[in-house]
Length: 458
Ligand code: PLP
Image 1: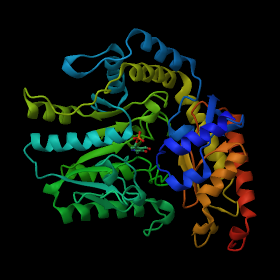
Image 2: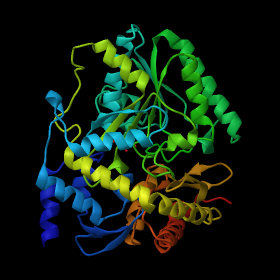
Image 3: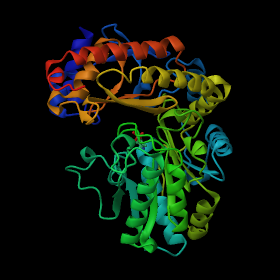
């Protein structure tokens, strides 16, 4: 009963992110009621393994007492403190300091946002301000990578390179440019890592030459492209792109909203890539999704240029909830968890996840298995030699998501037939094995679909 009335209220009033509004009205909401560890329970009492950690964010898993206590305590002592007027709060200051200590190189200055989109949007403003400060206001062109996702703010959505975020919204802006993705499974340069890196380096160089290096302000990349379908670049890709940017005095922004906080192993994927970007954006795992928070890190050089450029004037960028004390308290408690075993468990569980997914490689529908740590995907095809995607008319995303759900598993099922995995880092081996088994069952059922069967080759 309760569930039914919620469905009606939702249909009438709640506008969902990235939804077909009419499609959602027709199908209705699935209400999640409670969660513990890696398991969520819906309003009908169905228990599901959350193979996607909410939206790749609940890295610590659900019901972590330390996070709940940190939030509760902070709500009781100081539920809000503004960062304006020279004010601050202890948890926000301590979190900034601890993050700076862990971040690669001299990324020592942290601006807190509410999530990833406004973290990215803040970088656009900071970069513009920086270029003015150093006397190069004409450096106002931005480059990002096809298949990339950098949020859905008015400016950030144009750095995002997924058409659904552009159509009807008047983006990308004319100062936002793209180069092709490294997408190894479907790269015209082939599958060889060096060739893929070389192709991306050439594409970036060509784009810079076309725009003029004196016009290019910044380049954005994710260490692993998440929302584009979990596209893992060859080792060395980030480093090679970073080197090209350095050569041309172009700021490098590493968007670690998904990859940060243990998702690929360490706290920051950039440290594995061996680079220190000029800006680094995070969100999601920083508070494990318990409360909203994101952050922009900037290097000493960038921060000092902005500070000197402004002189005694304020830098006109801020938000009421920047450096929110409750979010910061949760962030500190999350760091404690990461440092005291959660990263280690994530690495162990990630290795098992990758091993399990690789064991599905000989399934007739699996064309590609890719990932790093607890961030992975399998790409489904009906013809392995031709890499033919599942028939679009079969709506593979929706169908496979629903089927996995019936099998007690939540995954991200991308429209093009890619299944994404980002389980909580607290997963046990048994839970990882169950994710694999439920995936196998879902694939076997999909193999029986007549529209899939009829086009299957090999
Ligand atoms: N940047 C990246 C790489 C992301 O994956 C996301 C969200 O998934 C964002 C930015 C936007 O973050 P948010 O949804 O918190 O606004």
